[in-house]
Image (cartoon, rainbow, N blue to C red):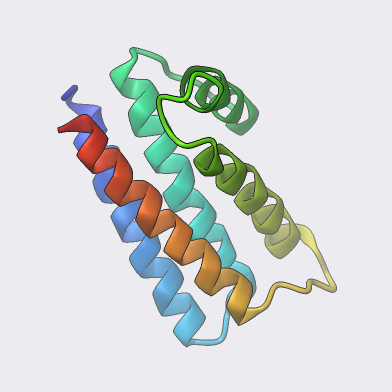
Length: 124
């Protein structure tokens, strides 16, 4: 593995923990953001292994979709989860009247955990 890859995967695990902590404090909007970042860091780790680095979220989303979802290297559901989580993060960070529920975030956290576990297995 390239040097940054395990660091990104560890950062994803930390983001999951932060999302769980925020959710326990009934901060669903902010927990959604951390859950999204967990998914994002996992996608970045995979792209890092391909020698790819991006400065914009949309570029990470697109490259992950092109290299992993569309090719079937990983289940396309992970790409869908990443995109859906991004929408929730935007809603939670910028929305004034958000509708993010604890159930939404619980699902996002479970998805982030599954994505992280799958990618760790994929990379070993």
